[in-house]
Length: 198
Image 1: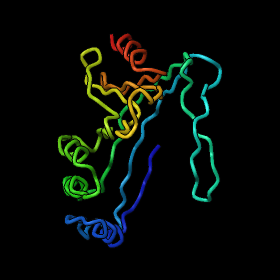
Image 2 (image 1 turned 90 degrees about the vertical axis):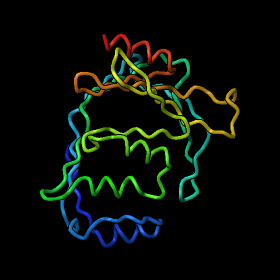
Image 3 (image 1 turned 30 degrees about the horizontal axis):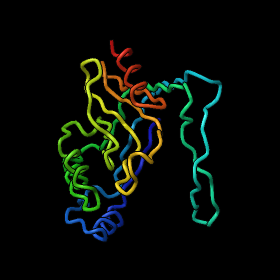
Image 4 (image 1 turned 30 degrees about the vertical axis):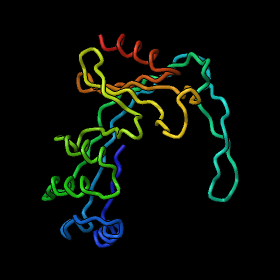
């Protein structure tokens, strides 16, 4: 899949300044066509015939209607596996990608941890970024390959004992392919990931 879009620079910069940005895009980017290329993805489910979820609380939608939330069934044996290559941002000919990177890194509404993460990536046009929101990710090694464990964000106002299992995913890159395993808990996901990375 390829998603193409054009920037209306005056409007984009107006929005950036509204949020306090000091660095904005140059006028040369106006009406230029960018594209994000998403490669084919393989998604596999092992386990029961259908996804097993249990109802949670209720979220309020904008119209005031309550909709039930769902979380993975803690007794489920289902495992989800995804394999794909990383997305790629394609900039128009003559556009300096470092200028775009510089503006994005300095967005004032991004948490400092995300800005630091963005600044540390050299090949950001073809790197899948996974922000660490409230302790939701941590780096690991899977079969000698760099990876991350992704868990639900930690709420500092909720005691750890009161937080139920919402599943965990492990993602790593091996031989140019992004791989991810998700299950009901971290140890299970890690065990399957390690077996796949051999």
